[in-house]
Length: 257
Image (cartoon, rainbow, N blue to C red; front, top):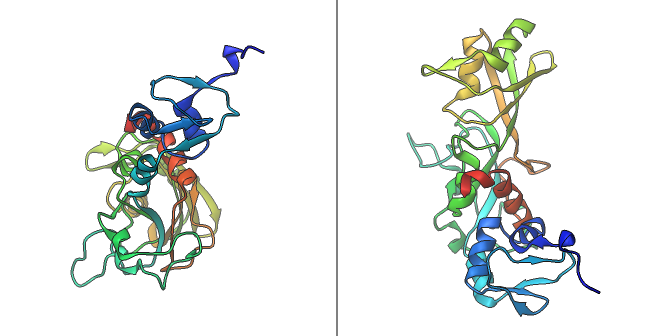
């Protein structure tokens, strides 16, 4: 029975949907002859296949993906995101075998620390989800100024949360002589707000609140794109799965390509 062309899908897209890697990485692996479809090497870019095919990688292809390390950590207050400063420790110093939340999936090695850098800011007075990665494509997808990757925060404030202040936070704040992108800001309870942003300027939420007469007393990031902090305890970390990495890259697909 002849396959209907309408039932076929680009191989690189299918690899991304299966969580193997991003589309860009898939194209690179395909052109390098590292992708097997039902046991046969496919090396032509743009090739289309049935969604039911079995996809595997050659040894070198697997090694290429495994060389990059990406993890999420629940950064506590008092740690900086990147380089140590003023006697404060960097969040990466928390990464070790004792603080790993899921050692059964992949055991920690000191070599995993090589090249790790934060994908975005989370200031010293804030806690929550922070991504550390040696994957430049992933980092760019998250932090590029045109990125569509959302960052969600729970923010505790002092001051009256009025409709006027909420509207200004959503649409009318200017920082460093530049208007911010529209934000989703909702009142969740007395003294508590939810922020969803698609940018990450230095101390942005604190400065936004200050501009409308609110003072931030506590700030916690709980989501980046499709990745949620979940039940990860303060100071704990875990590796990201290939699917989690692929999902984040695909949200910022136009950026990384």
